[in-house]
Picture 1 (tube, rainbow, N blue to C red):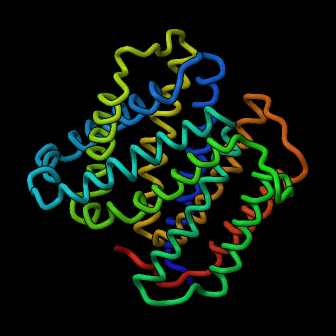
Picture 2 (picture 1 turned 90 degrees about the horizontal axis):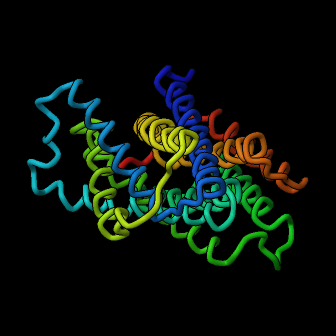
Picture 3 (picture 1 turned 180 degrees about the vertical axis):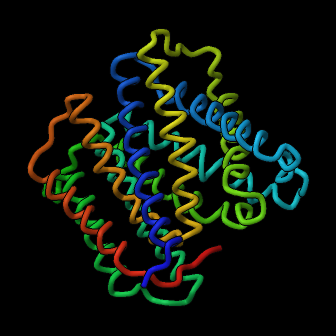
Length: 302
């Protein structure tokens, strides 16, 4: 019989995935109706989210707020997590949304479980189990149908968007594995908070955000709040919490609810229309989520 922490891990990971989908829809809304770009949105998303998380940690335990920075041996892993696992993942993802739409960008990002499962199997020196293979096949079928509408020789999105989606997928591997040791020592919120701030500062300096136009209307600020609070602070924390409870390979696949969430928000809010292949892809991804939630086994944690 499953223990309660495992069931809770599944639940919290699902919520994180749904909130990520909502975040993508908020970003698309800002791109479409407020004419801002990823160059402006992503640095502010990272910085504001990191500040909010660290404020939370400050109230929770002010004595520990700078602990991750006191040990210089933490810097390589923390910087790797911040710059690749957070900054590059988020910038490439939102830029892909800017070039296409939230649903397409999100589902293509979900080639990440292939890489994550490969890393886990390599470190634990094992082959994927049958249940993992079945779930992985379903996830790949879902991604394929959503991205191509069943046409092997054609994509329903620009090549540049595809490239940035795959870059994001590769960076997700770093996001899953890089912070785990630090999170065990300092806690998820503290590590994530500093990672977001470091990534946000570097990207803001690189993009020179002070020279870019941002949001100016209330609706824009509300959408930005959706990206920052729900789509970043809550989503990232819930997902990393799930990784600790059920392991990165399974958590990454359960969070594949994100493209379904992104598609639903896109349809209901932004008026994006979908074909029959899209719905078949959604079903395949949901089956992947259900299969992985039915069986528990030991997972790799780095």
